[in-house]
Image (cartoon, rainbow, N blue to C red; front, side, top):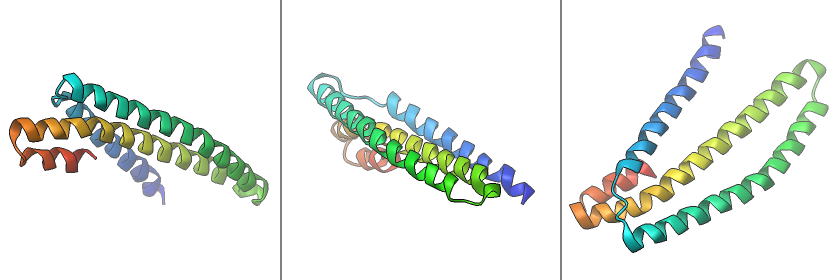
Length: 130
């Protein structure tokens, strides 16, 4: 059990490092400039506004559910289970936000790669980046 307490967060950190590598690799890819990039920026902005609004609604639900968990558990389990629940909510929200941000940034870069480097490069960007 002791080893699991240290290994589980380690895998989380490894996942965050890999996500950061993919994100910064996407940012290095050519976004095309001009009209395509402007359209991509608008799509990206719209997706991020959607995520922001969705997270506000989900946060209310998560708070209500977390309080219910806290109130209706045995006293010995209240703190640890509530904290674990909220940490899971935060981790899930972060994964969704990072995933949406990366995927919307990858869209235009996939198009540009197909136009500039041929159709063989586009699936590499699309599948590895969201």
